[in-house]
Length: 123
Image (tube, rainbow, N blue to C red):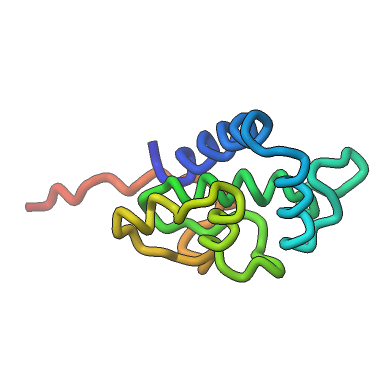
C-alpha cells in the first residue's frame, strides 16, 4: 500500500474515531481554532468542514511518511498543533522521529498513487 492509499484508509478510520471519541465541545473548539464554517454541516463545502480537516490531521499524525494534507492549512498553522488539539498528544509520527512535514507539500491526496516504474534490470 502506498502512502496515499494509507492516508485514505487512515482518513476514513479517523472519521469513525472522531465520531466516537470527540465531544460536541471538542468539535466546537476545533471548528473555532481552525476557522471552519462547521464541523460537518451538509450545507457546508467539504473543504470548509472541520471534520474533514480533522480526519486528515489524524491520518497525517499516524503516517510514517510525510504527505501533505489534502485540505490546505488554515489558522491552525501547524499540523501537530491540530493533532494535539484533537487527541491531547503529539503525533506518533513525530514521537517516532518521522519527518514532520508540517503540511508542506511532499505528496498530495488529490494526486493518485502512481505506479512505480519497473526496476532497472540493465545490470
